[in-house]
Amino acid sequence: MNISEAAQEMLEKLWLEIVEDKKGFIDVKKLGNTNVVKELAKTRCITKSDNRVRFTPKGRNESRKIIRRHRLAERLLHDVLEVGEDEMESAACKFEHIISEGVEESICTLLGHPKICPHGKPMPQGKCCRERKKITERIVSSLSELKKGQYGKIVYILTKNHKNLQKLLGMGVLPGMTVEIIQRYPSHVFQIGQTQIAVDTDIANDIYVRII
View (cartoon, rainbow, N blue to C red):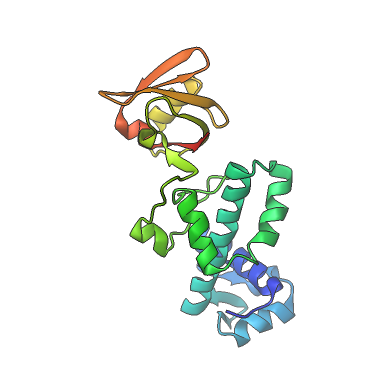
C-alpha cells in the first residue's frame, strides 16, 4: 500500500491505542497531524465520526503489517546484530519502511517465527508462521530443539506459567546467558556457568536461544 512514512507511523500509534489497548477508537485531537489524518481517511484506512477515529478493515490490516515489520526489525537488531536498546528503536523505525513482504517472511523464518518483540509485546503472525516454514539453520530456536553439545545465548523466555518463570529466573536462566546442552532425554539438561539445570520439554520449549 502506497502511503507516506508519516501515515505509517500514525497507523502504528493507532494499532497500539485501538487494538492492543482495546479502546476501539482514538480521539482525533490526540493524533495532531491533520494532513496525515486526511491522508489515512482518503486512502480509506480510517473513519472519523464525532471526533473519534476508528480503523476500517483495510486500515487495521495495513497497521498490523507495519507493526509486524517493526517488531521483526527489533528482533533482528536485538538477537542477531546485538544492537543496544538505545539505538534499536530508531534503527527499527527506519528498517521497517524498507522491508518488503518477501524479506519480512525470510527474516521471520530465520528468527524461528518469534512470538514477542524484545519488549515483550505480541508479534502479529504472518503467512510463514501459519505455514511453519523452516530453514535448515535457524538463528533463534527453542532450547528443546538444540542438540547435545550445542551452545546458545538466551534471547527471551516466553511462558504464561509465572511459577515456571520465577523458577527459571531464580536458577539464573536469564536473557543474555550462554547455555550448553548436556542431554535431551529423559529431561533437557543444560549448563549455565558451573551450574547444570534440568527441565522438562514444556519448559525447554519456552526458552528461546540464539544458536552460537
